[in-house]
Length: 189
Image 1 (spheres, rainbow, N blue to C red):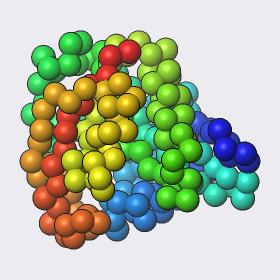
Image 2 (cartoon, rainbow, N blue to C red):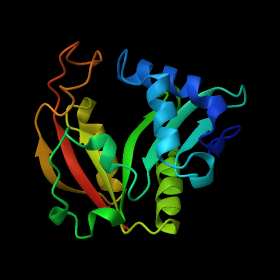
Image 3 (cartoon, rainbow, N blue to C red):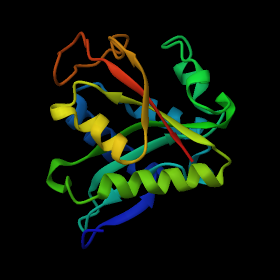
């Protein structure tokens, strides 16, 4: 870990900073405070401790990994995609879900995203998950999203064109009407 950085479970007092960083990284409207509050409640909040945040010495949030536990992610995805758990090698109710990760560009390349993901993966395993589902951003610069997940042990199982088109946000690549694709990926625990 880089000097002066602290990895902590997601807490309510960090919500505003997480939302600001997410919208800076992925585009205005990507995440709202209400959306993060609902996510936190739906995933068990501080009792579950599945999501993690990095803070620097100034107490500034510089990274986040937001994670749903088994049986907590299905409702938020309902109607948005028609996933098929037969591709995963585990029952749907035994899969956790990596929702999103973000890291300030000043800190990229130091292994911090991996540390946040490892903390979430360990917490998911302790919660009884057998696998982690996620959706990689296919158009990420240089394919960084999928490469990162593959290095972490994820395998691609399906591609979803126009995956984020139902969201009302301004994609950093497409603008208001996002046409980016997602790669459905799974990691066995």
